[in-house]
Image (cartoon, rainbow, N blue to C red; front, side, top):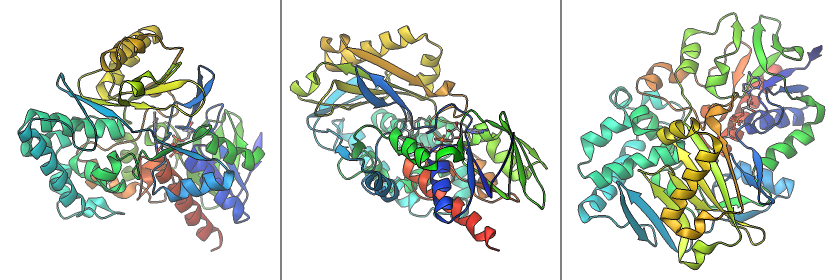
Amino acid sequence: MQHKAEVAIVGAGIAGLKAAASLVDLGCSVVVLEANDRVGGRLKASEVAGRVVDVGGQWVGARHTVLLEEARRLGIDTYPQFAKGRTQLQLQGRLTRFTGDVPRMPLLALLEVARLQRLWARDMATVPAAAPWTARNAREWDAMSLESWILDHLHTAGARAFARIVPRGAWAAEAAQVSYLWFLDALRQCEGFGYLMAVEGGMLDAKFMGGMHQIARRLAEELGDRVMLSAPVRRIRQDNAGVVLATDQGEVEARFAIIAAPPGPIASIQFEPHLPALRDGLQQRMPMGLIIKAAVAYPTPFWRVAGFSGQVATDDDVLGIVMDDTQDTGPAILLCFIEGEEALAMSAAVPAERRRRVLASLVRFFGPEAAEPIGYDDNDWTREPWTHGYVGAMPPGVMTRFGAALREPCGRIHWAGTETATEWAGCIEGAMRSGLRAAEEVARRRNQ
Ligand SMILES: Cc1cc2nc3c(=O)[nH]c(=O)nc-3n(C[C@H](O)[C@H](O)[C@H](O)COP(=O)(O)OP(=O)(O)OC[C@H]3O[C@@H](n4cnc5c(N)ncnc54)[C@H](O)[C@@H]3O)c2cc1C
């Protein structure tokens, strides 16, 4: 089967869908080619104890204006993240419970945690938004991992452990696996440590009634038969006249292509002519953070009665982060994030074993009632063939050498996807803004 459109978009994640919607508004004909048999990519729904839950992206930050505007347009309401009560922080086997923003730690460690935030804020402020590889200290910072920085700058075991849970909790990446420069840029993209970690008014401010995934589904419904499912793009050929994309459902001819997929899956597409070495090299060097997200349902939010917010952060448990996801009606839910090296180990376990280990952890934090859920489901993102994980991160040496290729068009091929964003990269907001930016690039060329 042969299709024709002005612009072919690879990937019906939120970036590809937003790019398509924006081009359609400009009167441009588009086709969106999606490898999976569903839209949404890293936005995905599941059902636990009769309630629809997001097993992919879910929180909307208070400053995520594009996403909030889209939801408003679609008539989808938010509900606030519950955060009343005691938070639990377990570092290196030491469990503390506290209210407010300041964790309970030995004084020296606490002072170092405050210092590390000042140092990160200072260094982050010198990283230019659209070109972090041009920062004054770019070479030095990109030559070291975040772990090397931690070992050089922090001396207490508590502050070191605290610093290591930041990349794991935010990007499912280990401190030893990301460059300090990439980490600073990722922090900058999320407006710094304070905003990244904050619930009320911050990154974890709210969620959508009925789930985040429905924003992708609704956008795809509006695009109608412009979206082709089960159509993985295997090969892209381009010349002066246009692009031809070979999918499992036939070929698509277009004037331009926008690739809106994570770096790993893009690397499996065959390009003719071959992509420039810089772009090709980038795709091979941005591994995805490893994550499994579990939703555990109970008849009531018993932890609230015991004075807990439901929020847990740990560095030495199978669970990295736990959050309350209870709404006014329906079952009470705890969301559990298994990240980084723990995700690698748990991905090898059979589902029943994963469930057993998640429940055992919840019992340690919330007591015996946690052993009796009425529903459980988890999604192992390391096994999603068209995504591979959470978000593409850069190990040492990649940003300064290959970063410039992130958004640079290759002939008629333009790049979108959250990893290419200059603001809110890694987030749904960044993905949407990247789609808008790529659509604008193509719209400008279309009129030339
Ligand atoms: C567990 C989890 C929790 C998260 N939580 C949050 C959160 O709370 N808040 C937040 O802001 N962000 C969160 N994120 C991140 C957020 O979900 C992503 O940043 C965003 O959804 C990425 O959108 P995208 O369109 O760039 O990429 P994707 O969603 O990955 O879309 C890319 C699409 O391309 C398709 N594709 C790949 N290769 C091909 C091919 N060859 N041919 C055709 N199609 C192809 C894929 O199937 C996919 O549908 C989370 C992510 C995960 C995994």
